[in-house]
Image (cartoon, rainbow, N blue to C red; front, side, top):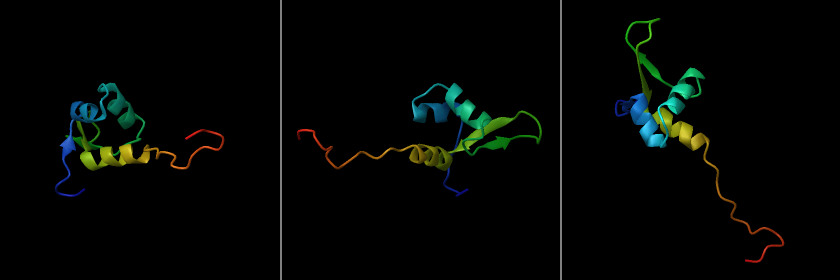
Length: 75
């Protein structure tokens, strides 16, 4: 993890995604996003999401627009 990579709380991640806290928590539970657990091993501690992991998740879901005109459609 780069030194400049901020560790975000679940609330901060939800705010960046424009969702409730439930969505980033589900991503963590399903191991669909990288995260860091702070505190003792094996115990439920504080969870932080690297900002880069959130950006990677967003980029992976990015759908590019179609630039070629559709046949049969008027421009």
